[in-house]
Amino acid sequence: MDFEDALDQFDPALGLEVHVELNTATKMFCGCANAFGAEPNTNTCPVCLGLPGSLPNINGKAVESAIRLGLALNCQIAPYSRMARKNYFYPDMTKNFQTSQYDEPICHDGYVDVEVDGETFRVEIERAHMEEDAGKSTHAGSTGRLQGSEYSLLDYNRAGVPLIEIVTKPVIGAGAKAPQVASAYVAHLRELVKALGISEARMERGNLRCDANVSIAPKGSHALGTRTETKNVNSLRSIERAVRFEIERQADVLADGGSVVQETRHFDESSGTTSPGRPKSDADDYRYFAEPDLLPIAPSPEWIEELRATLPEPPAERRARLQEAWGFTDIDFRSIVAAGALDLVDATVAAGAKPAHARKWWVSELARRANEAGVELDALAITPAQVAGVQRLVDEGVVTDKLARDVIDGVLAGEGEPQEVVEARGLVVVSDTGALSAAVDKVIEANPDVAEKIRGGKVQAAGALIGQIMKEMKGQADAAKVRELILEKLA
Amino acid sequence: MAVTPDDIARLAGLARLRLSEQECAELAPEIGVILESMRRVQEVAGDDVPLTTHAVPRTNVFRDDVVRPSLTPKEALSGAPASEDGRFRVPAILGED
Image (cartoon, rainbow over all chains, first blue to last red; front, side, top):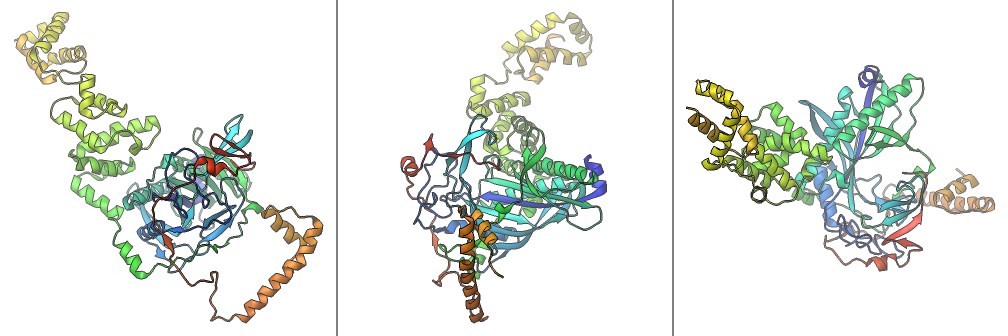
């Protein structure tokens, strides 16, 4: 069933679980470095390896980050909460339990307002709790995937890295905008944790991971249907696609008289579809109990207020302030937000570029390249300062707008700073009359009829020659100068 | 509510313990006695006794976010039954991708 038909008959409901990996220097319960990309098993110790007799110790900075995030999500901060053991057996979890929180999350009952096409949706937060990440498994053997693999290899560098899991209440009433609300919500969280400085928030590295619960119910029934949980959807675009696909798929199942199976599902990036994972089973009985090795967390009201004072400007207020300062229309400004370019444009303006120029480079030129490369905009190998540098070269007349794109190519290819790329690639605009004159003569000679027209007073025919001269000069000619020369020669 | 051998078998499964039918049958009344004793203790504790999970009345025991030396990979892997490429090698797990 296509999306419109599905929405005619059913109301979708969402539940989003987002895991945020904190950027603390050390892990949640031990002093091992919290670092991405280290050699396997170089950041482990008896605690995060779950060796007998080892005792965990809470990272105070992680608690601080959790409280600050809770406050930014308009949550209540629990005056008393405990860690809990979530018991299950899986090789990525050394202790055979994950240290998490259960019935006493540190943050609860908050909300965020997200905007989709100018319309505001309130997403209510049920809880945000602290827990630890698992190790990383690689499935070895025939295919590299789990199916058909002979064994798995485990790296525990990530085991014990602090996580905050943020769980929404059911998001209902978004209708056809449900997929966009889901991705706008995750984009909002990403912006928030970056502004708080508590996570690198790079989705392609798994710093921010989303599990999307989707259910549908007959239109107007105000009921909640059976939900599926699509695991680890790891880009904003994928979240939108996964939610959309699940709505369509579940509508098909129900329309055929079937029922939706409560299960976890996997999202396939290439096809944009989800496939069944594991149905709910006995193994989901985690037998939680309070962690006896860790003492309760009881933040004082004074500490909470101290942390509240460190919160950054709320994203909505910041957007309003920037739009005003930059003088963009709603549509232009929204295109920046939608491209995930707000921080980048802000930093580019701070580095000296005009807002319109900063927007142009990030939203059209660089967003296209990020899209082609399949990465997030901020993962491109160019900094806001370099983009401002490219624009400065245009402003100073060193390169044309067109050549500036080559400069960007060079920076992205790791050829150095914009000025270095210009020199290495010889991209400087030629306004030296000698070199230009030769090219102009050559093109005039090749086009006697056009030249005759210009001599006869049809000045606008010069355009045809300018194009050819620019080509001759590989785009590096100063167009105004070329025009001047043509008219001079054919006067 | 009496603990049945089936309850024991299910818990044993969750805890990855291999128990025979006879062991389950024997353990059911034993666990039952423990639970019954706990129930009786709960009767004694009035509303004025707070739920207690920790014997020490302390909170907010935190560590500074300062990196301390980790084990070397060799040390980390020293107790592993099998390893490969600096990683722990374990049998393939089915049922989850």
